[in-house]
Image 1 (cartoon, rainbow, N blue to C red):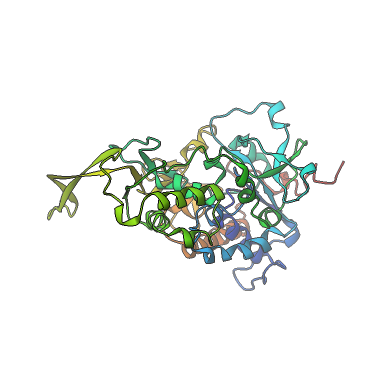
Image 2: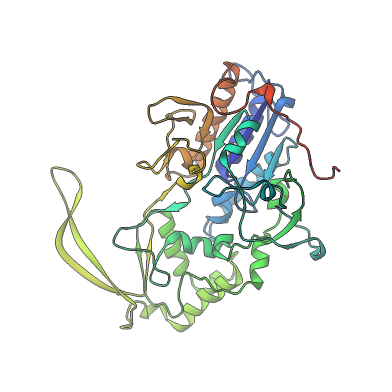
Length: 427
């Protein structure tokens, strides 16, 4: 029975799921598995389509890793192998879900794909807005659906509203120094505009073969930098990995920054801060932009929680950076009327094992899954994401083997078309 999988999101979790599923059904990209875990599927009956709102794949590995930790990106070599499989297609610059209604004419508009060609005659700047695709539009064309959308929404403090130049989430700074398109006016690098009703996809491997976005940013005016000029004192709220990455980068001297993979405008900004403000004088400027009130807390013996003491310390600072955790994208489900996202959890509602999505009353949604942070929340590192993805891939195989191809919103195997029309090179 054909298995046609749509994966929403193109970060590590998405490619771990795709790679593991190909292994389970027997694939040259990895050894086929034998024994009870082996899938009763023909390798030729599997197709995987990966949708991503950005032009380039690999998510946080591409746009979230601190520039002084390049070894974390080594996993992309495995992703490249998965992406090179002809049964895996990558659709970049497509936003799935949300409240935007797509008209038939809009659906037939040109779709954008990343092009790493050096020929300027074949490329042009991609528009900032991704092509909107309603979530329900996927249901009739796929037998299985995986959400690997991560947790892209930073949590905010109720007393610290976001204010550019005064209080910003750490994610803004991370996206700025990693060249994330949303931090640079939506620019995706070079994109080839393809006129086709069905988007002709570029493989993720070719999209990742060169850091196009970084090259293009050399010509982009730095008009949206989250760190204002003459910043002398930064207050970080939160002490997780993201907060420490930001602190470490701000404290790295220019002599070391120059050796890192940073967009030139970012390097210029960070270097200027060091040139005008000697490290010994950080925090000593009386011209701070804002005063931050910090309340001392104590541990409540009965509840085990921190409670305020009423004693405050006031800190003069130029910029407040909050790093308080992250949540999923609830807006994705606005146009689908499906109760799969739990606002109280800040993520999708799933079973503990296999990432099967559940309704509020605990019923399993047939053939719909959430992997990685989309299903378990923003915690853990890549190793945990790999474990989650393996569980999801196994659940897909198990559900297919048990005849779980019936019921729910998605198509049955006999209803889907494995070969796509309008592929690149076809009339």
